[in-house]
Image (tube, rainbow, N blue to C red; front, top):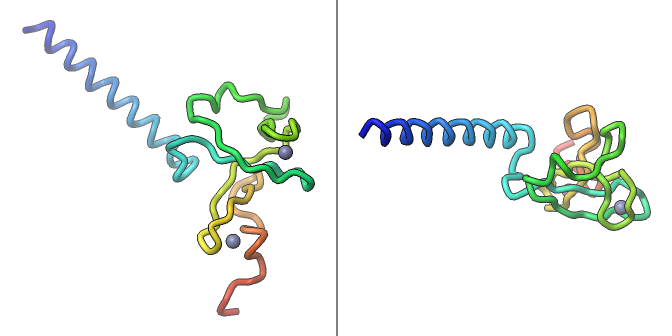
Amino acid sequence: MKRFLIYAGLGVLILGVGLYTYMKVSAAASAQADGFHLKCTAAECGWYFTIPREQVRTYPRDPDGQGFRCEKCGKYSAQIASRCEQCGEWYAVTQGGGREGGCPKCAGQKTGE
Ligand SMILES: [Zn+2]
Ligand SMILES: [Zn+2]
């Protein structure tokens, strides 16, 4: 009975830590529970792809940590992508936080201005 309690406690602990980690990652990259959405910023490429969450840590990045390696062109110019709420298009979110420029497709097309 005592052993059972230890295992039960351990299970709860693992669940708790897992949930905490999951929530932290979710906060950093919203709506990316299934993986990271990436968009290549190379002008001639623009490839959109996803990598599973468990591969994010080991996925090849450039030495400065600025970008992920693009699946298609092989350059380290793929960035975390965000989905435009207006047109549904994926676009690269620039480093340094926020949505600088926002969706390239909808930029300058905002209504009410
Ligand atoms: Zn590319
Ligand atoms: Zn858009």
